[in-house]
Amino acid sequence: MTPLLRFENASFRYSGRQVLENISFSVRSGTCTALIGANGVGKTTLLRLGSGALTATSGAVLVNGKKINGLSHRNRSRLVALVPQELDVPFDFTVEQIVAQGRTPYLGMLRGLLPEDRAAVERALEWTDTATLRKRIFNELSGGERQRVKIALGLAQDPQLLLLDEPTQNLDIGRQVELMELLRRLRGEGLAVLASIHDLHLIRWNFSEVHLLGPGTSFVSGPPDAILTTENLQKAFNYVSRRHQLPFHPSDLVETL
Amino acid sequence: MSNLGYFGIVCLLLFILLISLLTSASIGAVHIPTHDLLHAALRDRALTETQSTILLSIRLPRVLASAIVGAALAASGLMFQGLFRNPMADPYIIGASGGAAVGACVGIIFLSQLTFFGFSSTALLAFVGAVLTMTVVYSLARVRGRTNGVTLLLAGFAVGTMLSNSTYLLQLLDPNSSSGTRIVAAWLHGTISVPGWRQLAITFVLFFLALIACYPLMRRLNTLALGDEYAQQLGVRVEATRIAIIITGSWLTALAVSLGGLISFAGLIIPHVIRLLLGPDNVRLLPVTVISGAIFLVIADTLARSIVAPSELPVGILMVFLGGPFFLYLLRKRKKEYAL
Image 1 (tube, each protein chain N blue to C red):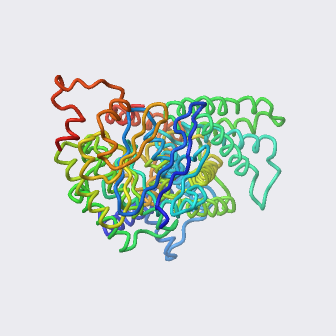
Image 2: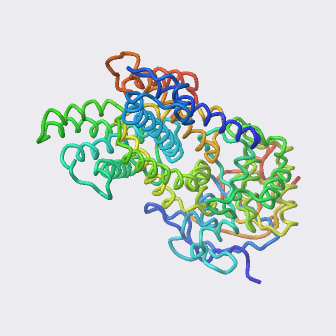
C-alpha cells in the first residue's frame, strides 16, 4: 500500500546551511507519528517540507505516491494541513470566522459556505472543544485556547494528513491529555498525524512511531521503546544525565508514565 | 450580527446617502429647497430655469462626483489595509494617490487633447501612475516574502511624498503656464471637480466595474489575514491574488484622484471605523464601507464649499483638519494594536 506521506532522501539547504540531509520515512493513514529533537534542529522545516510550503533541495516528498509540489494548490490543500506554532492575525476575527477559513480549498471565488462546509466547521469546533469560544476574538484568547483553535482550523480543512508543530506547547497537563485523546480519535477516523513534540512523556502511549532528529543531521526512526532510550536522548539533546538531582528528568518520565 | 440586521444597515445607509445627496444639492449660493427638488424629481412641479441650470450643470455633477470619490477612496483603503495586513494603510499614506496625481498631472498639463474612447487621458495616466507606485512600494516593503509594517509605511511615505511634490516641478514645465497651473494647484489640495455628465457616467461605470472586480477578492482578503504561508496552504494563489488587489485598489484610487485630487485620511478612517463596528469580515465590510465613504465625502464636500462661502475650501484641506485629529485619537485609543 502506498504510504500517505513519504520522504525519499529529502534534503534541504537554506542560505548555504544544510538543515536536513537525506531524510527518509513514511507516514501511513490511521497512525500517529512523533517528531522529536533539540531546538533548532529542523523539525519545523521538516513539517513545512511535508506540507509543501518548502521544496526539498534534493530528494522527494510524496503524498499518496505523487510529488507534493506537483499537486495543484487546491488538491494539496485538501490532503494536507499544517498547524503552525504561531498564527498571527492582524484584525479582530472571531474563532468561528478563523476556523471557517479552513474551508477555503473547497470554496469558489464567489460561493459562500454550504451546509456541508458548516458541518465541517462545527465538527472541527466540537472535536477541539472550542465550540464555546466561537464568538470570542481569536487575538484575545489564552495560549492554550489559541492552540486548540489552530488545530480546529487545520481540521476544518478536512485533511488526510495533519502536521502539528509543537501542538502541546502552552497546554497544561489536562489539556495535553485532551489533545492526546483527540489524536486517538483522529487516528480512528483514518487520519495520519505527524507532530513535533517536546513533551516526551506523552509519546509512549499515543504515538506508534518516533523520528528523532539529532544534531549534525542524524535521523533515527522506530517504535517509542526503541528510540526513547537514555543514550539516544542524551546524544540528541546534548545533556548529561544527573538523575539524582532532577526528580522530573525526561527519561524518568518516559520510563514511569 | 444576523443577515437581516446587516441588510437593515445597508438599507439604512443607502437611505442616508440619498438624503445627503439631496441636501447637498440644495445647499449653495443659490438655495434650492429640498422639497422643490423632490417635487421636480416627481415631475409634478418644475424648477425655475436658473435653478435647473445650477442643479444640472454644477451641483448634481459635483455632488455625485464627491460620492464616487468617497466611495472609491474607502474601498481602496479597505483593499490596501487587507493587502498589507495593516489598519494604517490607505491610498494616500502608501503613496498610491501620489502616483496617481503625477500621472494625472502629466495628463492635464501635457496631454489634455488626447482622449481614449472618449475619456480623457488623465484618468488612464492616473491609473498607470498608481499601479507603478504600488508595485514599487510593495516590492520595497517586502523582505524575504514578508511585508514589514514599518518598512511599508516608510517606503510609502517616502515614495508618495517624492511623487506628490514632483507635481510642482511638472507645473513649472507646463507650456501653457498660469491657467492650467492654478487648476492643478487647487486640485492637488483635493478639490472635487465639476465633471461633465459624460465624464461622470464613464467614471461611474468604471467605478462600478471596479467594485464588481473587488467583490470576489474580499473572501481572499479574509484568508490573507492568516498570513501568506497559511493562505498558500489553504490553496490561495497568493501572488496572483495580490496583483489583482493592487490593480483594483489602484484603479479605485485613480478614479478618486482624477475626480477629486489628493484627499487624505478618507481612505484610512472609513474602513477603520466600519471595521470597529462590523468586525473584520471583508465580504460584509465592502458594501457598508463603500456607501459610508460616499456619505462621508458628500457631507465633507458640502461643508468645504459652504463654511467659507462665497469662497471655497478644498475638501482635501478640510479632511486634513478633520481626519488628522481623528486619526490621532484612534491611534491613542488603540495604541496596543499598532505596536509594529
